[in-house]
Image (tube, rainbow, N blue to C red):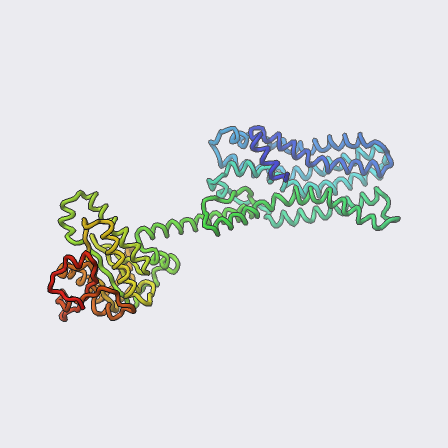
Length: 515
């Protein structure tokens, strides 16, 4: 079981007494540092007082932790949080950082002093001379100062992590706390140097203790392997470096979630160094991506998804105005005014929404864009804002789909008219004072609207102009020539054609002849 799980278990099981549980765990982790040093001194002096040395080491280890007692009052808010007192989340979280920072220097001094005194006491109990006792004191200062530099920051960080995760949660409160110095890079470099110094010194002591280095040089390899396996791995990799890797693993997991489109889980900001700043920055990025997705979803509700995607990706300056060849489709409800007068407002809106639930998917599936709603009708364009090679065919396919689905859904209770025209338009963003609209301008649009109105005269559901018919790559079945007609705003007549359906054929005046 790695130490992350040990700390998490201790918090989950004993949160209200977590300070004492953490004290016991850290004591158990530190004791294996003090005891071997004491035993080595006994061996160097040729004494047999190993039990006494182990007892002195245990007392020295306990004394070293006396330095943490002045900060124990800061555990009250943390344990109070575990007990259910969630009144001051920020204070409880800040106390965890303050405790680590306030005890750092004291811990180094405490380890150095207690380690040195332990070495002197064990040396004296083992019969060492005064000069050797001085040397043991120097060794103790050097060895235990480096041990403190390895663990005094990282171990408390790991111990406080479960509490910080529980307190900060998904609230983002950890993002608000200021970042301390030194940085993660400084801590890491200091830990690496301290570890190198400590194990070099310890290796030299052990080589001297066993006394085989001169007779058997290969023994150095065995000694190095043993120290690496039994001391270096659990102390440096397990206790010192593993806590620093956890935020990096969190970041890697977070990027995988975001890549999969999951923005629901924030990274825990549980360090006050630059790793904490990185986690907070990641959360801000994730919030921005989530906001972008919500904005795109909102656009998708009020604006065509194709248009919304381009606006978000490139900005509205892409629609400054361009001349395009498109096909325009108008759809409108027949006799809507009498229908609205005969129904409640709620029923009328419900019917409109039901119609547009048919129109919009049909247009989008054909590659078109619903440009705007016009009361009881809609304007759709094929070929803008995205170009479409066979836009006339797409417009006709959408019209046929809309007609068929309206017949099936409304069963004659609601009838529509559709007009299609093909030609040049100017597509661009129109508006001012922050209110903009992507729109189409040109005679092609006006004619399409007039053709839709003409369906009331001809009795057809779908009318298309000669321009649209000529632009079709594939001529559909059931095309009926409806001749030329005068339309409002045009000096010349407009030649139109109908797309016959069974329902239309049954109701058409006999004067129209099939082409």
